[in-house]
Length: 491
Image (cartoon, rainbow, N blue to C red):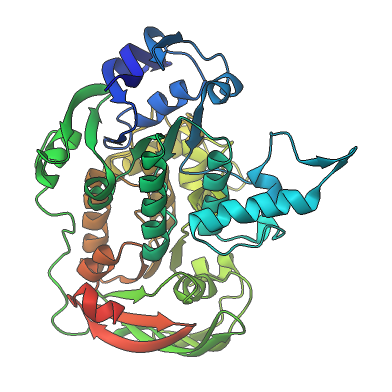
């Protein structure tokens, strides 16, 4: 079958960093083609070249059999390429329907916009995605998963011939992901070609016809799903064996002293009567479908509004973290699920993002912190967390998604917390980076920290947790031992 898009010798530099090195391969028309690789491997750069964000420094691109040189995203979209990026900001003051059709001609009735027809078309797209979402809902009030749904609907509305999905399920629960896979199969049946970028190999093997891997900016190879194995694809991605995806430290055989005690924690409309103990050296997993209240419990403990009722004790001390600053003062650290919206300050540098919580401690009598001192701290973080960054002064927005997440984690752990609240800490991170993050977390529990973990990947929560609390409708309905199987948890 003829290729729909061909890359020939594509190279790209960012300053002194070579992001792509003579990448050459093709995507066949009508297939689902998975693109995999570690963060920083060049996947995002290649996607941006396809989307007309910038041209390659060397090499050429052919789309639908013709030479293509997209000067801007509008040209790429006009050619028939739509991209759903991992992190797509929506216009928060517009409705879901208005975001779906943003940048497109709107239906009209005479000289006026036909808002009823606009909402009807958006509702039809949401129904096609298998989700219930009000077209008139204000985008700023939507969850991460709902915003992702709006982004996918926006791409589908353009009737693209090539649809590039960059980590499309990173904010979706299992049921939503399954609906997306059904949509992908339907699009393929109607002749749409899909490039599926994901770190989740179970998804890749479930949906892709062929799999291509990038490593350190180079094309490694392409394999069919039938001839590939997960272990072989991991070797292609990282160039080494990753024996343990979840290298948990030795599970706690006996509970240590109680570090955090929660009794009757409630917030109307979010969760009710939540009670548990978190012990030193323990990872306690909160599991449940989206909307079950797991993330909301973490936010409440992190001092984010609305303030809950109930009792929170750190050791023997009653505490009431009324703000994020108060939670940090109590040595409670929080890693949010939405790193773009809540975890990072995108216009700022790696140095500024990584050391933000240390500035008051490091400032002298004049309130000034020498840049040289900050750079020394950042270099230590870079080494400890294996952060790939050109320099401490580089904009954090220039880093890959996985390295941005490592900056968020490094900053949160810089305060030497006793309790660590992790909301989907490895979302959008490649398999190698996940193993590194899991190893770091295992070491933290070995040092006596307590970890409260929420993960959209149930296998991660099961493997990394010593105990599990299952939540439904904002309430804890069961406590399960670590190592419980998925069927038990889902039941």
